[in-house]
Amino acid sequence: NIPPHHQTCRLLRAKLQSALLQNVAQSRVHLSKRLVAVEHCPDKRVRIVFEDGFVDEVDLVVAADGIRSVRQPSSFG
Image (cartoon, rainbow, N blue to C red; front, side, top):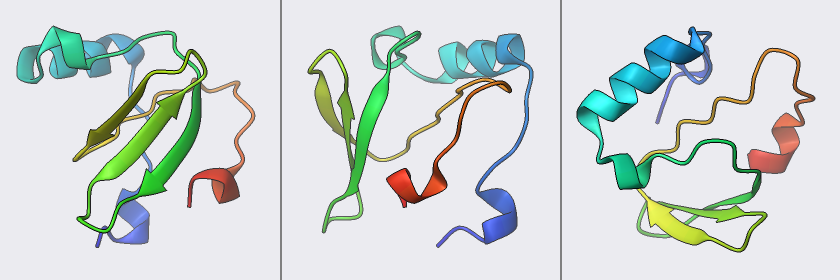
C-alpha cells in the first residue's frame, strides 16, 4: 500500500517525460490520450482503458493531467 501523502505529487512535465523515457520503453508511454477507466485487478495489476479503445494491464500508472484539469478522485479509487 502507498501512504496517502505519496499518492500524488507535482512535477514539471518535461522532467516527468524525460524520467519516463529514460526508464521505460517508449512504446509504453502514451501522451495526449484520455484515460477513461482504471480498475484494480486481483493480481495487484491495474487495468487501464483509454477513450480510443486501447486497453492494457500494467504494474504502475503515472497520470499527468495538468494543473488546470478537472479532477474527480472518486472515479479512479
